[in-house]
Image 1 (cartoon, helix red, strand yellow):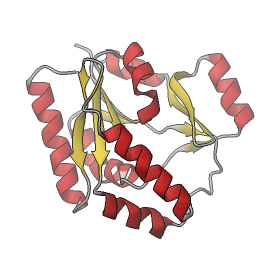
Image 2: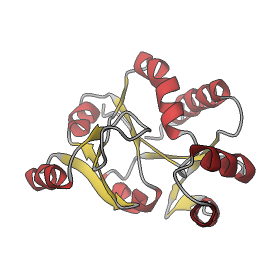
Image 3: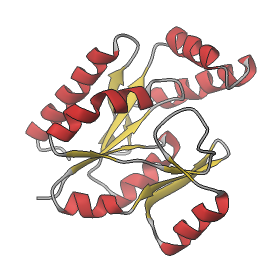
Length: 190
């Protein structure tokens, strides 16, 4: 039996990195691999536990076919290592930090993936983005508008997008994620 690809996405500041880190042990307990993305940003950048590479190294890896998925967003290149295909064939579930803008392309390669959109109430998201201090007010408001447009869609074609609210306690979000994965597995969704 093949594993399932769990495609977590959400706006910057929604807490994807925090959720992934907090859910790492419970996910491993259910035979789910958590993938580290390859990103063209410096290793000193604050954020997710990613593999930082130069643009040149990213290009070499892409040309060699090292990535199962890759995309460009917000001035950076992102790659998901090809090892996920082996893990899926072995029956392991795999959680990746995906891109909302790349979901349609990911569905072409993995039509049975489980898309999960991490949502946050607008006022909470605005406060998180302001506290983080990476962007000015104009950029933050633009992010919030893009987020509204994306979250207005409940599906990508025939594929429903599952929503997971992360406006409150992280432990509650982890429990809700694990419950969602259990329900989708019981329903035979992959």
